[in-house]
Amino acid sequence: MGLSAKEAAARLGCTAEHFYQLVRDGKIPQGKKIGARRYWTQKQVDAYLAEQQAKQQELEVQAQGLLTSEQVAARIGLTKGTISHYVRLLKFPRGKKIGQRHYWTAEQVDKYLAKQRAGQQAAAVQGDEPKVTRLEIVKQLGCTPLELWELIKAGKFPQGKRRGDRYYYRQAEVDEYLAKQQKPKPEPDAQALLNSTQAAERLGCSTENVRRLVREGELPQGKRRGDRYYWTAEQIDELKAKRQNRLNLTQVAELLGCRQENVAYLVQIGELPQGQKIGRRWYWPRAQIEELLAKRAGCE
Image (cartoon, rainbow, N blue to C red; front, side, top):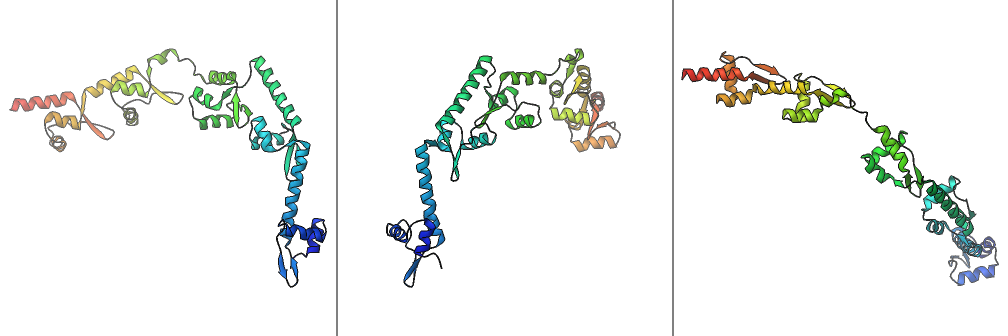
């Protein structure tokens, strides 16, 4: 049914007359009238009780000069989440719990700030203060933020020092990592080697064609160093000379002035040699085509 005025007053710790006065002032709902009496739900009474407790706590906080988490965050320059994290790590005072919230004195906050300033000044004197952000490190390393995070998780790069919601590093840490990642000096014969890009430029084709030539066996596999393959200039020049002295099906058809199907017919009747198949293509020496053209010119 609910609570009567007497039961509600007992729950609030006041008299029935005072409870009725609260109802008349609109601080507590009118309740539900059943017969000649009125009744209130426990939820209505508890809501007023919680409101009074919150006001009491606020007065107590103001009387003691305590600071809320929002005020502490604004004073220190951190977020509320960071303050909670520091409290769990015992890097920040736990504070005083009143109700469901924590509060701190101004002295506790000032002591923390003084300690932080002293640490920063000592590090600055030593010239070892972390100042480099992760964004600046990404630019120095030439990688993405995700790749840097993977290096940190793998233990290949330092964790850094957290301040607020950011991490900072010493430039010496970054320089040390870069020094470790520097590639060793090339061997004496490395100067004569060409990577896939240089080989493609020398052959006048794309890097995809260079890989295709390797798959088809026309170009040797090359020498692997790290994650790349290298070829000697002699190997590339030899292949280039071979490619210049041979013609593919399209080039043969253009020189003979016919269609590609006619070239295949010439091979069937024996007027043109079979040619050499490399991968999926057929090639003929330039001399054979020139000889065939000379024969045709003599017949005419």
